[in-house]
Image (cartoon, rainbow, N blue to C red; front, side):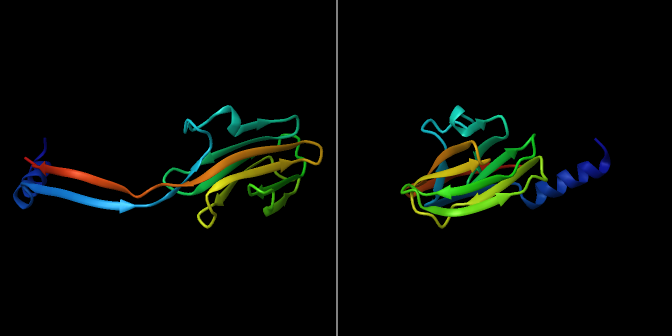
Length: 150
């Protein structure tokens, strides 16, 4: 070990030989659930057709969903976001000049329920379903720890 690293280690030991950390926090966060067993990728998350491939992924610790699209034949696609009652909440038309795309959907303003991302090339229409759920407040406790640097 060189001398400068020893000095830094000694300085840290002198400044903070012992620290106690304790924290309690409560949070209520909605989450995005793609399937009941909470697996990251499941067969219901991925769609393959002759003209396009689509998959949805939850963004961890947020209420966002990523939609990954591959368009090997470069056809135009339509994306629609529908609620449980089939009402269209969002629509977008993608031109044929792209081969792959990644879209983010922020669901933080949405109520709990089942939503559908519908992808269509004009001939094939494929739905990808997911749920937005609110969690009950959960106490998060970080136990007391003693940190000693020597």
